[in-house]
Image (cartoon, rainbow, N blue to C red; front, side, top):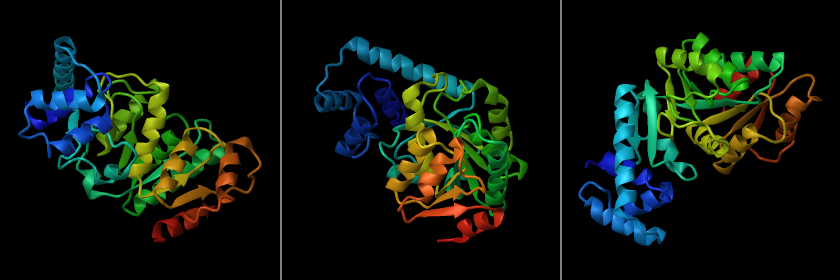
Length: 294
């Protein structure tokens, strides 16, 4: 069993997560030469759990099924510690032990990305901002990260594609189970135009509520800077912003002539925030200034 298979098999065990896998890798100084039996013994002691032969066999079968699915669908399995694992994810909360990626995965190491995020119900002006700000970002040689959600995310990815820019979609589901279904065509366009789909979930997994917040931390980690298009004071956008703030990342917040609507209440709250990294963006010129700022 090679290194990737060992990590993947551990991820298939119940009650064994990213933190446990990372701790086990540190204990063994990597898994390259460690026997699977020793790794499993250590994990049981660390987690204070008991794994019987059935548990282990189920995990092995699930591992093999995931590898088969990935091979059939051109999905690359990237494990923590490998050369293709995105460096920026090491600094996020609870780095994924396993990533599933498809598309132009080399771009993750070669390019920097800005997150462009916002509400699933943007105004017409908000849609236009998502398109135009993503275009400006890509015209400056930077990729766009978003979550392939309805609304602002959709327009962010679309703006990048219209500029032949690179865009990265971080999913709350498996790559073969795109959510929302209405964005299946957009996901295909991203791949066909040198973009990337990335998930920490096996290809066939469905989206669930807790996976959206988990996805938000990855969006923040993969973004050099974050741009907020429109948001209420609660929701996924603010989760992503909070993750970005925790890592001292610059945050650009769209500023509109009329800020007194619900879809922009979060924008107002952020602009009023004392966080030093926040900058108002009221035009494409402001967006260029945000890009150029250190």
